[in-house]
Length: 209
Ligand SMILES: [Fe+2]
Image (tube, rainbow, N blue to C red; front, side, top):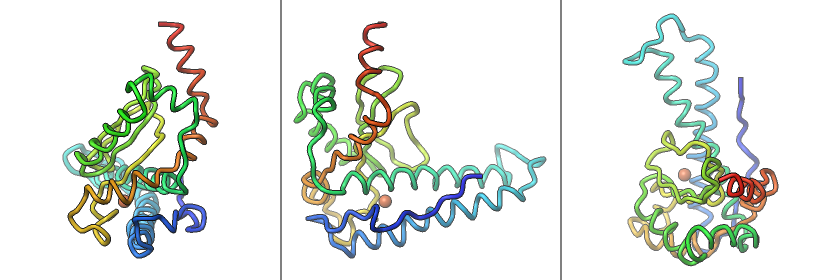
């Protein structure tokens, strides 16, 4: 069984972020993120005891636990990546900038679409590398439970209201323009490019096509 531990604030918390108050970030981290971790572990324990013989797609204890576990599981992964994407402003690695330019025409075109993706989302805007096509996509998802498969995340923007409401109220555009975009850190993407040889993989896919 996978057991999650809440990450240390010092490792993940991007404070200070210009445009996002400590109160906003503390509330997001301490209440929302830690809440997902707590419930994930609670579900893991309940799952061991659930009567698997009664599994049913309309209603069963196993179904309800697995539906909510997916919600918490994805939420934990996305939040941990989201804070790394705000951990000190930096530019994308050259190789990633080149891939973005190839797929979107320019970095500015990508940024424009990523921003529009965020402003159109009720949950998340995720820039990711699609392992099947070797292309970079901006993925909109309205819920932690809904995602695109085989995509390696590179830049992640939390569009749930809890991410900005203390600081920006309903002014979601200001959150994106002042709280997130100017503060993007590409260190997380650089780490993913290091961990998975995506540039080489993309070249091999194109050669095979
Ligand atoms: Fe969030």
